[in-house]
Image (cartoon, rainbow, N blue to C red; front, side):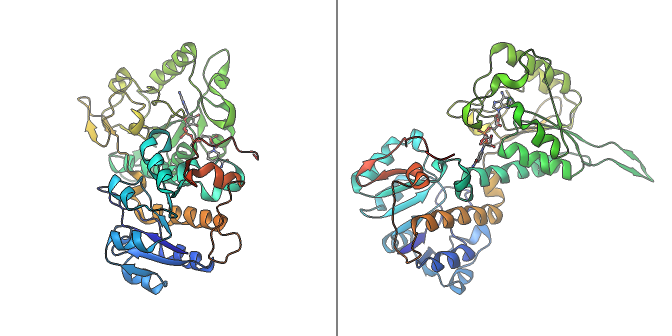
Length: 381
Ligand code: NAD
């Protein structure tokens, strides 16, 4: 089969779904690879790099979509791309299936197959295909780098001939994949790092990374927010009050706040209120990784950096993985390559779209003329 990757069409999107390395691996599965010219340029991969890796380079998106049996891309397709999708073709990309009935139906009606990367089940066997986690990891890392870039002091404490420098204090709210990456980056830069999550089971992980878990003085402790499947649920008003009281205490102390708190299928909980921002020291920085879902900080403006009257910088960018396009493309292309490995069990260049396979079934949202979203829960943990 021919696996093809078009240039991303969303403005400012620098990632690419195939790298020269992933193409070599795809060829080992018996596939041929094709890419649109300059598709990898913004991520640091030239047409020559692809050609050297045995990839055919075509001049237009139209030619790419025509040549490919499987189209692998990063972002949810634009309608113009959907028009190019045809019967028997497979599309692998982020697809936002929960809010994208129109495209799902269109794909099913055409008889195309769509594998939505955000639907890869979060089971151990599928970790290598888990693009949400690989992108969240980058977002968490980059959030700290971005904070540092907007912060006027060192992260680490130093005693120098020119004076003693105190370490920065960083608070990470939400210790999922992005939060843990932020914690690891922050501690490795030498900051005193605190972390909070409604799921107390992450306390050990947080502490093993050299950060301090913030416990609440609350009767039920953090157990209140724990839910099945490792995800958070909505907190009770009492728990939320206890959490906000703790944050109010910390606001004047911390220099950098990285918020990553999300609850599946909901707007982000508002956890860093206006009075907390006002209580922070001038020069402090907030990076709100929940900006796309409404933000954890009341004052966040999506996709913008603002500075408040009291000198606090609030960053609401939603494109952190694209800001590290080489790294993000490498990891995403590897996720895609592993998906293709599952789809090519005999390594003979022939796709077997096995709907009995938990991972393939979970991620497939249109197949054999039907919308196959939402999937049944996975059988294996
Ligand atoms: P996420 O991005 O959905 O949420 C981020 C974090 O915010 C979560 O840790 C959540 O508990 C926390 N949060 C929600 N409301 C909060 C609040 N009010 N205050 C503070 N924190 C709050 O999470 P994620 O990174 O996708 O990971 C969620 C879970 O899934 C974790 O347990 C993770 O280990 C697990 N996971 C498993 C796999 C796998 O097994 N393959 C892969 C990825 C993630």
